[in-house]
Image (cartoon, rainbow, N blue to C red; front, side, top):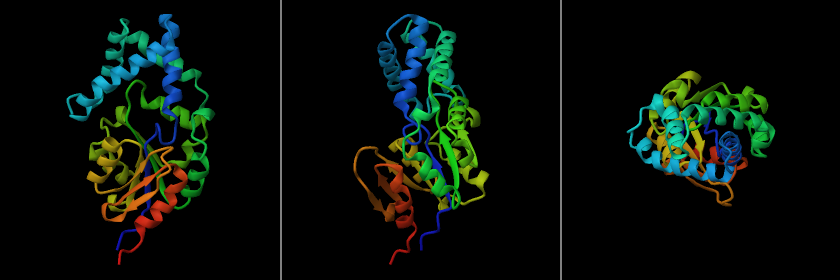
Length: 239
């Protein structure tokens, strides 16, 4: 018999919030300080991320230093200072409209789930600190749905490290086997959650796919409106 799911943890960006919009806004913030086109900054942001991501996933970067390392690497690639990058990130985040960055279905889904499940955010960081994401969720009126928000720079752990999922479980007082994590990254979200003993929902927006593999404790969904059905199927007794 599959245990009843009681805890749902969500990745933040590309799951609840639009990563493309904050990336564009931060690129504009940095570009305005450097007097260069924001599209050029955006390309450098993507290139820098790809350069560092492999080292990050292999554990070659210190968890507590990822934000500093990422901003410093971007500064090098843009031939400027880390301080200016930090200013540009802050400027870009401040320009962002929190209401527009939330995916359309998110509020209704959280409203429907919050009275029956313990909801948590588990998010890695890269160019901006977790406090910025926390503020966006607060301004968007979503923060109250979550019992806890865990950000890599604040807890010193990043997905796919299973310890960050364990921490969420302990904060809610709910066993990992009664928990499911939702996210868009196979390595960080799905791999991390499954290795921790949770179930996982792999979000592929726009894919039009819905599939549940109960033997693996895994679901594939194309938007968050499918999450509740996935949870029902993953919780059913297997005959």
